[in-house]
Length: 274
Image (cartoon, rainbow, N blue to C red; front, side, top):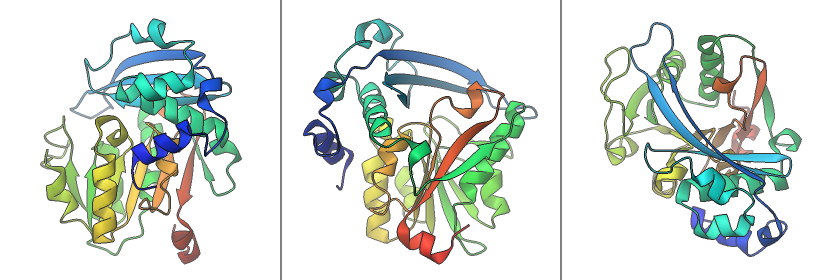
């Protein structure tokens, strides 16, 4: 599969598991929240739409105003295939994520490395999460690392690994240290030795572009995903080099220990990447 639409077609065709027409999106819910870490000058505003299918959840972030909370009443109880075909893209991605997570839960995946995130305040949990993401980077000192979807602790974690961050975000203009953040994804993709991209690229439709460019340039692509973590996993070894998958409930929604799952493509596992 080369694109997300290819994956969606395979699921709708029953090629990867049960026919989604026979599954129900029991619950659809919508979350809007803000976060400002201690010492930070940025308030992160995030919106998620989430879908439950049986024992699994799927989630996808979206831009403000793209989906309203009324979607919860409209979509809850829908056949999953209906959401995959007809829902706004973020909800369709959440439904696809839920389906793939139900077929192969992260907790049961033999190729997943569970990484426990400690109990504690947001600052502790954010640093632990972003350190785990940066640990998937296998780069020499001074390597240029495109970060598409900027969060300050991850910028710091990339620097601690010896990387030089090239930053891109649609909403953020500078980091807490004053680093400039570009809006031009192609600018950083074309200059990078490695790419780290948020799962939100699945929501805004740029994932296929990032994936294709990394394939063309033969540079590693690491995806860190709360949004569509099981969707991104489907491209592991087919453009995605490594993945940090964080299923719901996400780390920022709990002060208790939770688990994220790290995956590496077979070639990277054989190299013994950290």
